[in-house]
Amino acid sequence: MPITTCVFDAYGTLFDVSAAAREAAAEPGREAFADLWPKVANDWRLKQLQYTWLRAVADAHADFWDVTQNGLDWALEASGLDGDAELRERLLQLYWELSAYPEVPKMLATLKENGMQTAILSNGSPAMLDGAVKSAGLSDVLDDVLSVESVGVFKPHRSVYDLVGKRFGTKPDQVLFVSSNGWDAAAATGYGFQTAWANRANEPVDRLPWVPHNILSNLTTIPDLAQRL
Image (cartoon, rainbow, N blue to C red):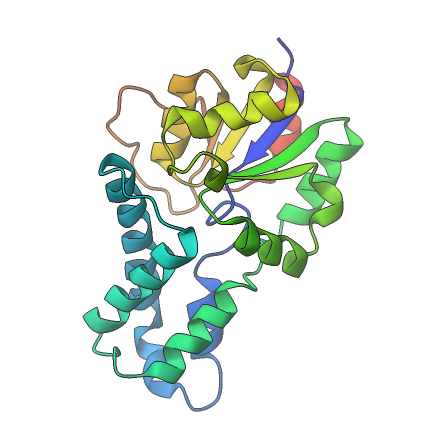
């Protein structure tokens, strides 16, 4: 069936999760952090994801904001920065104002012009996602923002992907699901969605029972892909 709905992961897909650390490192007086920010950003994101998986399998759900703070605390300690409370607060503040990747606004606008329904499906809490969407100016090009908080478990649990059909009345093969996380796109393939992996870092394909249907370097060609499927 033709694609009617394009659904996007948020963090790392539409929003640049490294932006908070990168922007903090460029501020006056943070010369020491300037040398460490890539490691902090990478550790922060990795632990944030790992904690969602562990909480999902342990049935120990928490708000994504708590998980985000937990991941940052680990990352700061790993770089010897756990005593810098001001830096911690600044990084958390900037996380609510993450930049969208450059191609995102035009890509979403083109999807809407083509008659597609558009949405976010994210581990993020509603408040976090609302802040990111408004900060990036994407409110007018998204039909909805769906959060795992409504089912109380993180991706890749199937109940999260169920949210799309419940909201839009779609069958799985009418949905193009897009994520920068290879494991997320793979799990969505297993669910029955058409999928695209935004593999910005040119990483290997995850060794899972499923693989993404399409692998892209960014989101620029998503409107063309959605019309071809």
